[in-house]
Length: 264
Length: 328
Ligand SMILES: Cc1cc2nc3c(=O)[nH]c(=O)nc-3n(C[C@H](O)[C@H](O)[C@H](O)COP(=O)(O)OP(=O)(O)OC[C@H]3O[C@@H](n4cnc5c(N)ncnc54)[C@H](O)[C@@H]3O)c2cc1C
Image (cartoon, rainbow over all chains, first blue to last red; front, top):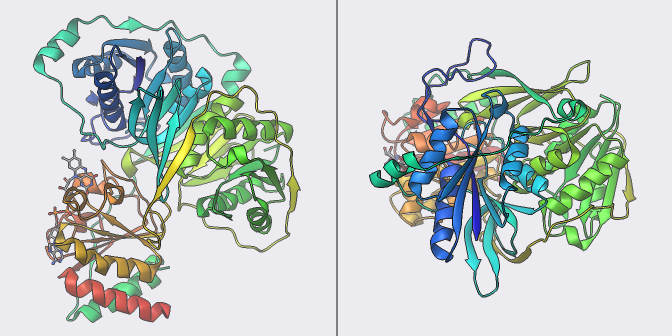
């Protein structure tokens, strides 16, 4: 089986966030870009399936600018992906989830599409738009947020669960399909040094340039990011002084009701 | 803005889900005089349609077909885009449920629209440009997005918009034949649903109040204290990873980096130290209360109100006080 896994470089979760000069985005000066969060779970899931399905092959696919996109594809290779495809874009283009979906779908369809894995959302913009939009462009079904994905050899179909409100929806589905993965209920592996070195020498395939959308198409689908700011800092809790637990409870309830106004 | 605003309404059982009602509330403000259309898909839609019609939708369209009873993004997107084209809709508003989040990107790609998801505030400028705010980076930053084109899809965050009240005129309910779905891909099948225990209260994603417990609870049976507090507030119970790793509660309770992300009106952290991996999952909550015996616990840095003390004394007193003021 050909397994495609879509990954995106995101700022290291420890990054101290600062707005850029224009106040429209993150100041990326000195930011370390990593493969993280749901994408890491997606790669882990791809590798688990590869180990379980004889003769399968995992290709990581990413959209974004040099050098960070190439670097996270190398991280994916070091973890055990067999091949990688890079759809190059400018830093500006990389901010547009629907453009990313168009490019990624185009990059995926250069070969057979059986299973596409993607994190349910990226750790940075948390948009969650890319996976379902790629599925639409590929004309295949999409499911998410998914946990516990397996291939049932005898039935020739996938089994998985959607982690939805109130419980788990168990499903079966045929290939081809796209799956948006929930958090790491799997514990993502780390790369072995020898594989990191090997990944440095692996050739990364380049996706054909994105065919430019027509002007009305581009205008219709444009969402413009016009602001990026930090929320007011939390200044520390108002501490409740009390002599008895009852007094603490009374004071807290009064504050929640009259000041915070969040007591139902 | 030219055409009407369309809201996709989801149900649980026969009732519209709360997040969908919030979507009606948000869409009502955006629609102004252009009309607000709600769409319901599936079987036995009448009861939910009546509720939605009383909450400000000028028109409620029901598309009765059992194929929609299981959520398939591909199928739903096909139907919703068909309706949007037929009704010359300008904006589709989608609730921030797990289904809604799966639908938003698919709708946008199919309709050739601009899209924004996870929205907590939205307004229309006099020129008809939609300006949306959305928390990103686990609530550590806020992004502003402008949608200027003729077609836009707006996905909301749960708990960010008030439920509409039933004042104003009641809309019409119309049954619509299943629209042209276009080519649909091979779809999967729902084979079972493993629900959380009955009577467990609202789901974490939708709860307006979450009472969350950590290692400070000391034993699984002590979660009864939190369940009682949550029940007094009509809320849900969550947990830190220390709790789920110990097997005191299933993984589905876990809040944080490797668990769920929640943003209730009120989050009460009990016996939770406030590790960064926990904070990222709850930091966008409106009001945060911390109850912890350690005055230096990091949770107090992000909380709005703090009580330093023994949870085994504070929590029962708090439950009693809330029952008293809420008259239950
Ligand atoms: C990669 C990674 C991912 C992680 N993901 C998550 C995640 O998703 N969610 C998550 O929660 N954690 C996560 N963690 C774990 C996280 O780092 C913390 O270890 C965890 O959150 C601690 O849980 P806790 O606060 O319940 O326990 P502790 O840190 O042990 O805190 C217990 C608290 O209870 C207080 N206490 C004790 N007795 C009482 C009493 N009688 N009355 C009042 N207070 C009392 C103590 O003062 C203490 O502050 C992750 C860690 C890693 C490395």
